[in-house]
Length: 253
Image (tube, rainbow, N blue to C red; front, side, top):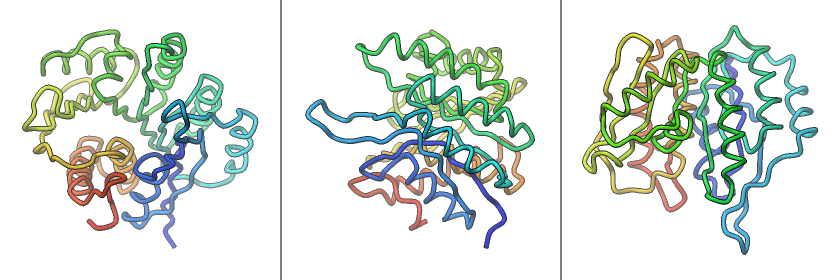
């Protein structure tokens, strides 16, 4: 049995492409033991794809149940509201000695501007306590209140996120700036590194969750943040290549 124990604090994707399913599949592929504290459920309803937060008391009970587990790393995914995020932040603060990867998922809808603003402020509170953050372009724009239209903009946003307290930043460009290449910007407060992979015309649902989970997995194996990000970018590329109609597939790699 693996003694590399990793906790994913993440949501349940009812279609299994992303969220806790992607996290656990990634850890299993790496022969590591994954745990989950569930932040939310999801469902397709007459209103579309809905996020249903776990009751904060129930979420607190989950975290309390895990208090004696000697985790090697923590990965944070979808935090559906400030109450759940606050509890997760307290848990992270109590585990300052291990790597923590924050995927700052911001479900952005025009009708939820107030919620998004409050969650933005809450996520920034995590920055000083995490090893690395992995926002995509829309998330990076919300977190820094900037527009990203070029590679230089991505670098500037990475610098701003570092100034907000994040030790290491990966801004995921996806295919928005370049339809041929998925371009990410890595910044550790000193140097910028541009990481590229070809854009694949395949289902990439769960790619962001898999990327953050893989980084936590690689950090546990002793990789540096940059090495962990490069290895994870390659892992996600392969997972997208093997994707099915529900999302990326990790276990065929």
